[in-house]
Length: 466
Image 1 (tube, rainbow, N blue to C red):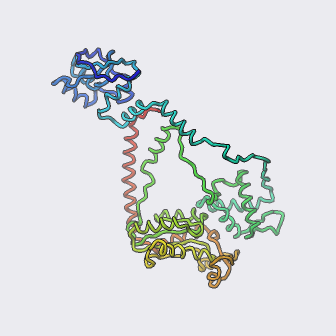
Image 2: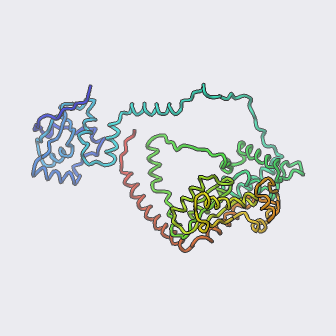
Image 3: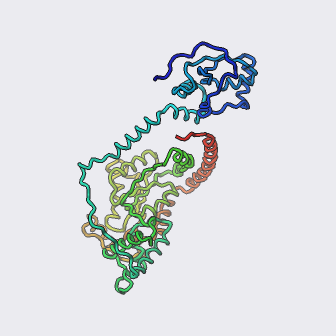
């Protein structure tokens, strides 16, 4: 059976009380109220000029078009009104489709448009498309894969009482650095060296040291501690092992609620927009990201984590950001280990911007923020590592500093933050920055008012369930 496509019949004069509103109209659109000022104005017009545009009704008297005119006509005292009769009935399977078509050109609210689209869509077809897409994405051809067979069961040994002192020392470090969670294994390693616990309580010569065996014992205890619930999972992270999760929802209502709640949140003013120079931070390794991110966020300074010598693409992106900024100079604040390669990282980055991306050298200002010789001496960092003689930069470093090296993780988190913040405030025009912060406060008030108004309007939508 196909939908009727003929035009409505001739105009007929039908008694007002012989016409019935379609119940579906209230679900799709708003209920028509005689108290509505617009309806009352329409009633006055009808009282003086009559119904200029006939209603459209079904053969059995249900309104397809003209619910507002029908209510207004009753207010105006009319007993009979002109109508066109559409050749379908209210129980026809195409009634809803015809109802929405007759109302396509009327001015509607967002919720009414949404309901119309829901009616027009075919739930079964849409669901089948969803299932087909999901199946295509999840199909696995096992014939082309080397499926691994799980063999023997491996049980981890429980933490013994002898490991208690070391476990307690780890948890003290974790709690003392709660503001910088998640911590890396290496951060905990260096802090254990400040007050070395016994790896085994009954062995007095097992004090924790900067050795591969001690570090291995730490990694093992961190794993077992988390599995046994004696170390907080969220306190430890391995930033070199990224995990990607998708933002999924149980249903559209949950998604709409979340999006409404987060509407216009996350605004950040370009507080560096009025600065004369473009400032960026370069970090050598992922383990310091949790420490420097808060400082960089406070000043809106972009940062790049290079994991050693940065690849070409991050350098290109940084060069592009600098050019788009139209600032006078590019200030690179680098944080890297105090070792042969760490000293070279900032220089290599700046040289690449000059040689590979054509930025004039007189516009590049590379700065080694940490870790420097002076900082090693001031913080009294213990000499616990030797430089790698195989490094191409060994001779240059050793001739100036010797062969004792130190890692960034050896610096307490609060101290590394202080060092970075001091460097940032030194290269910024602080007066200009503070002026932007004051403007951001005004921005926040404006956005809060706008968000409240928008949420109130969205809250008025009567969104039907899918």
